[in-house]
Image 1 (cartoon, one colour):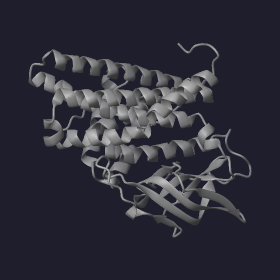
Image 2 (cartoon, rainbow, N blue to C red):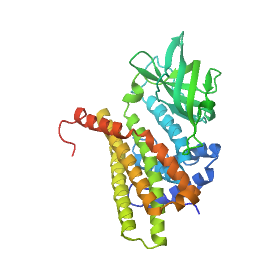
Image 3 (cartoon, rainbow, N blue to C red):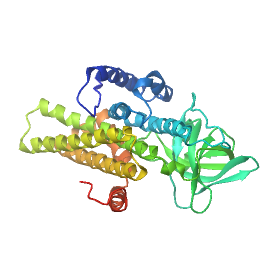
Image 4 (cartoon, rainbow, N blue to C red):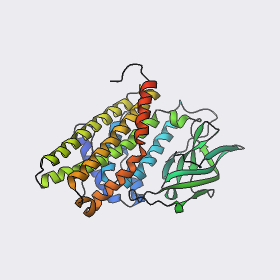
Length: 360
C-alpha cells in the first residue's frame, strides 16, 4: 500500500497533515499520467502558495511530500511551479516598466524553465522590429516535447542573459528526441537539447533579472526540498525494516546516522522557509541560504542512500519496484547540485557575501 504520510518541516499539525495526505493519495494516482500530474496544483491551490509570500513552509512541505510520493512526478511539476512563481514576481509593480511587454499568464499551459548552458550550445536573443526572437540550441530541456511553453534564458550580449517566455509549439522550435536519454533514473522525464530558429518570445524582466531576483534562491531551495522528501521516503524504508527484524549494532548505527542527518536537514530547510518569508533578506543572504540548503539536502541524500544500501542489502534494490526506482531517481536528481563546486561556491559566498563577521 502506498505511503501517503506527508513530509513536514515542523511539528505535526493535524490541520496541515490531512490535506497533505489527501494530496499524496491523489499524487500517487497521478503517477505516469502527465495530464493528472499537471492538474495537481490546480486541484490543490492552497497547498502551493507562491514562495516568499508568507507561506513558504507550507509550499515546501507540499513539495517534500510530492518528492516522497514520486520523483518523476515532482521533477515534472517543479519547473512548472517555478515558472508560475517567476511570472508572478515579474508582474510585481517594482518590476514593471511603462514600455515593457505584458507578462503572460501561466493559464492552463504546461511550462518548463530552460536555463542550463552547455559547451558548444548557445541561444541568442535578438530584436527584429518590435519583436524579440530566439535562435540557437539549449541543452537539458526537461520534457520539452510535452510542454506548451518555457521560460528560456538567452544571451543578449557577450556578458548578459535575459529571460524569455517561449511558445514551444512554434514551428521554429525543434526538440531533439534522438539525443539519447539513457538514464536509469527519471526515465520518464527526458532532458534533451532544443533548437530555436527565429522563435518570437516575450521578455521577462531586464537582462540579468532572472538570476538577481530573491526568488531565484527560493526556487533553488524548492528543488532541494524535493530531494529531502525523497530522502525521507528512503529513510522510512530503513525504519520499516527495523520493525520487521531486530537490528544488530551495525543496523542501529545506520538508523541513528540517518535520523541525525534528516533531523539536521529538516531544521535547515525550516529555517530557510522563515528567512524567505521575513521580507528582509537581500540577494547575497538569499544566495547563501540557497547554497547552504542545497548542500545540506544533497549531503543528506547521499548519506541516506549510502546508509540504506548498507542497512537493507540488495533485496529492496532488486525486488521492490518503488524503492529501486526512488533510489535511481534520487541519485540522478540530486546531481543538479554540483557537489564540491557548489560547496566551494558556498565558502566563497560566505567570505564575499553579506556579512564581515562569522555567520555562526
